[in-house]
Image (cartoon, rainbow, N blue to C red; front, side, top):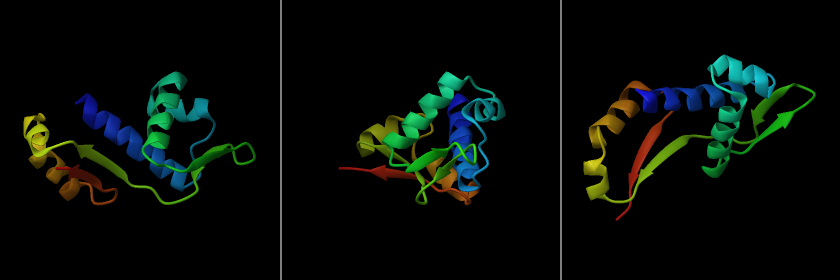
Length: 108
């Protein structure tokens, strides 16, 4: 369940950024029910995956500079088949979460 909670937090962060409604880092951490330190870990992970965002002191909010989708990758078909939940799990995410795509790429 923790994995799903993390995905939902990423999705909520991105949605709030799109609306320029995150509030301060402390307020955003409270909205997500996590520590501010954990929030910075989430933001770092988003940056590492290509999210282009900025914090505005004027608006007291993070906001996206460009549209962003969350993409998850696996290294091989073997690794994907050994992942708990595997391919069917990611397909179900795509099917039931049409607002924000979760893509699973397989690299040979």
